[in-house]
Length: 161
Ligand SMILES: [Zn+2]
Ligand SMILES: [Zn+2]
Image (cartoon, rainbow, N blue to C red; front, side, top):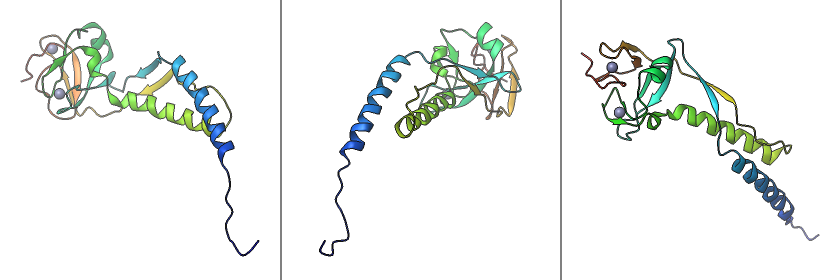
């Protein structure tokens, strides 16, 4: 050795190992096309929803019973901007982000540690306790909450006085 203070090393073995692990992950993810979980209501019995409109994106809360029994799948209204859309368009990113975080954790473990399969099915998510304004609609009786004053009822769209 003539004074050089570095060595060149080939990491192709590591790369091939990562490629094998990624291939296994891809198989796991393809099997996870229907990931289901449970969302727990907050102390008010409500779960969080989020306006589909990117200009608004307001978070709001609806009582789980009223979301199932009073709100219609075909149309729900954002209580803040009053735009209407199908109920499924109001899924809050809070829960989606929690699923993504669990995936990311599983992927990291899978790439660095043991080859345990990704397990993201059957997770339980908690709803933030944040509705500072609580309402009960005088027209349809739906119970809901917002953090800034509501304009309309998310279920029937009637203006909140
Ligand atoms: Zn909105
Ligand atoms: Zn209403």
